[in-house]
Image (tube, rainbow, N blue to C red; front, top):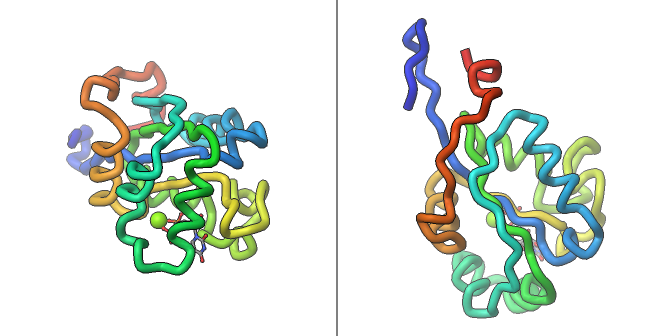
Length: 160
Ligand code: UDP
Ligand code: MG
């Protein structure tokens, strides 16, 4: 938490964003990174991962009773994903806005899912849905030492 000169609070958050196997195969890693970068968020971790079924079942454990759960885990294990942690004020909620709705057909143009996909089962990107789930997901996908602490030269032009 940082206090600016007028005593308002800028609460820094981190969120877990992943380009799913279809997004990787379709060449949408750069587009995903670009949108978060251009907004002003700071990339603090990134890696390509071929996730195991067990890892994906843990990642999506809140959905294990859903009928699409096994298909979802198979899809997510079907190729590498690009896992990232992005940091910034309000990044969890804004990350979800940059992604669009879960269903691409409910997603507006200008969002990643609105612009680049059609089907809920091939919706190209993942983003944490709350600060609490972001903490859990970051800890699941990254070791502490893989998260980089750095100051961007743009910081003072993004935050008053
Ligand atoms: N999903 C699906 N069918 C559904 C709902 C979800 O295949 O009817 C998949 C979809 O890939 C989605 C993921 O399960 O992104 C996780 O679902 P969640 O409700 O958490 O959506 P998200 O948080 O990814 O928008
Ligand atoms: Mg979700």
